[in-house]
Length: 293
Image (cartoon, rainbow, N blue to C red):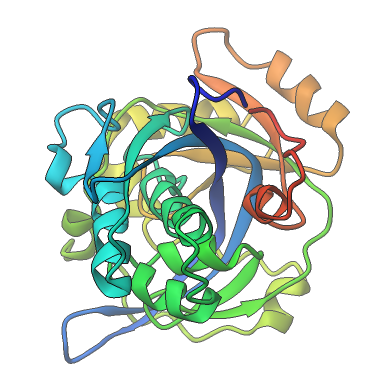
C-alpha cells in the first residue's frame, strides 16, 4: 500500500466470505435472524486518510459509482465517530477499490470499519473495540465483524460474534459483474426463512450447510447461474452473503491456482488466501499486511 501523498496514511479493508448462511426465522421487527461464518481474506480495498484541522469530513474520490458523498458509508462512519466523540478533528478520505460492489464480499462494510478503527487511532479517541463495533452496527450488520477483525461464527442479524479458528485455505473468487440488491432478496417470497438452527459443531464437521440466498439469486440472475456452471468444473461453488459473488475453496494455493487456470479466460476470477485475522489489526499494530494490496 502506498499513500497518495504527504500527510496521508493507508489502511487495509479486507474482503470477507460467508462460508454458509442460514435464516432460522424472521423476527417481529421485520429483521431476519441469521447464522453464518465470516471468513476474512488477505485481499481487499485500501482506505487512505489525511487529517484535517477544520473538523470537516471530505471524500476525495467516488467510492461506488452513483453514491453521493453524504450517503457513502465511509463518510457516514467518519461523521458518526466525530459526532459521538465530539472530536473537533476532520479527515479527507479516499478509497482504493478492489472489492466489487454488490457482490457480497463486504467491501462497503469493511471500508466503514477501517475508517472507524483508523480514525479512532488517528484522532486519539481510544473508544475501544466494543464501542466501535456498536457504532458500526448502526451502519450495517456486517460492520462489527470487520471492526473486531476475527473470523467468526455469527448470529442475530450478524452482530452476535463468536471468534472461530479456521484452517488455512485459498479461494477462487468470481464476480459475475452484477449488483444484487439485498433488500429485494430478503423480501423474496421463495426465500427459506425457517431453516433448522445449526451449530458450530455442525459447521466444523464439514456439513454442507449452504446459503439461503443461493437458489433465489441463481434463479433470478442468469449471470450468476452462468458463473456457477463454470465454477462447477473445478469444485463446489458457493454464493457469499446476499450478493452475486461466488467462490470455491481449496486447501492449497497451488490447487487454487491450477483450478483458476482451468477456467475460461472470459470469467472474472482470481485467487486469494483466507486470513487468520484481519490485516487491519496488523496495520494498527504497525505491521504491513502480507496480502495482495
